[in-house]
Amino acid sequence: MTGPEGQLPSAAVPPPPSAPVAASSTWEGQEAQRLERLQRMQRFATGLLVAMSVIFAVTSVLQRRYPWLGFVRAISEAAMVGGIADWFAVTALFRHPLGIPIPHTAIIPRRKDRIGRSLGGFVQANFLSHAVLTARLQAFRPSERLARWLLVPENSRRIARHVASALAGAANVLKDEDVQSLIDRSLVERMRRTRVAPLLGNALALVTAGDRHQRLLDEAIRLIAASVDEHEDLIRDRIRAEIPWWIPDAVDGRIHARVVAAIDHTLQEVDADPLHPLRRRFDDAVHRFIESLRHSPEAAEKAEAIKEELLAHPVVQQFSASLWADIKAAILRRAADPDAAPGALEEALRTAGETLLADQALQQKVDDALTSAVLAIVDQYREGVAQFIATTVEQWDPDVTSRKIELSIGRDLQFIRINGTLVGGLVGLILYSIGRLIH
Image 1 (tube, one colour):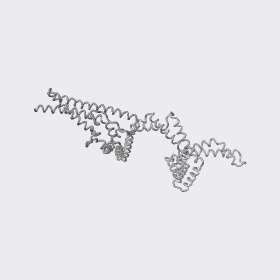
Image 2: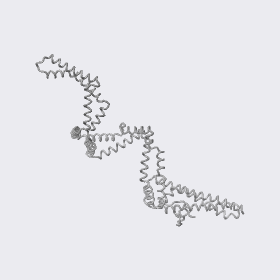
Image 3: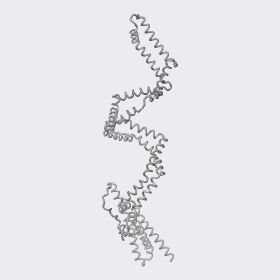
Image 4: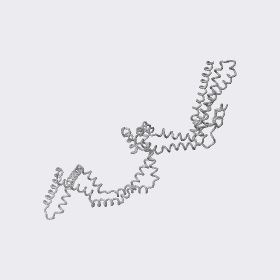
């Protein structure tokens, strides 16, 4: 009797063809364990078949002397047939039984390419479909898991450290002059293209909405009143300097008193009367200025001239250099001190996690967006995945492919041989018993 590779009693699986195989020690260990389990089951199945063959031979000799051994002989005979038939079926999947090129045997090596195409199509249809992916992603709840993950301080700190290290590496690689030039182009040039007059007009309109500028006027009145009180001696000296020398000092004092009193009286009236004419004139002046900034070409030209003058100032020209220097120094400090107190990025990550975890609607939006993104990517590469699987299988060596598959499922297939032997024996007993009853 021959075994799985040509000799039935032999349980050994042929060694793989000599070829350089790049495999990790872990994979090699798993492969050795699978080979050992496969050979153990092969020996058991083959041993059972050999035992049935021995029983058949013994009972065939002794049946004339002991007629009741006919039942045992029928069992062993049918078990032999079932075991050999199932051995043939299992062996035919991986190689030619007995080394004979019988048609429709060595199915896996001969149909390897078709199996690869079928496997690719199966994955494409059953693992990369919209329904399967959507259900899986929705059940996984990625946004909730991400939020809970970010709430763990060590996780957010780890991300911040990786970002800081990456930024530090990029900062050391980038040339300072290139970054400064980029800042000039992105900030200074953008400011040059922006019309400042309408922007200032809109800002002032926002500030003056709801008569907020009147409150500014109130503060200005109080400051002026306080300044008059604080600088009364200066006002007196100024009046004395402007009045001719021949006017008596008493007159100077009365003029000073009247001027100060007039200023205080006017300021008090303006402060107390919301409808004071001075307030109205101030209101009209502010609105005229806003409209001028918004619509007057002359005001726009003056604003642009002032802007260009400011942008041409050496301080502004040095802004990009100082800005990048500060940013780069902060990045390097952060990367050099991984144990520093939580930074803005860590706090932002944890805040994002808290916000996401507390908002179910936001979680659903994030999950929907992620699902849409995954489906879009899968739609783009679904056929490529199937083609990749088929092409990869086509490149495999037929014998190596057959061996790997046998190591993966061959142990379970040996139960087919065992069951075939046992079921065959049972069927043989039933048929023999029916035959004896009939005769």
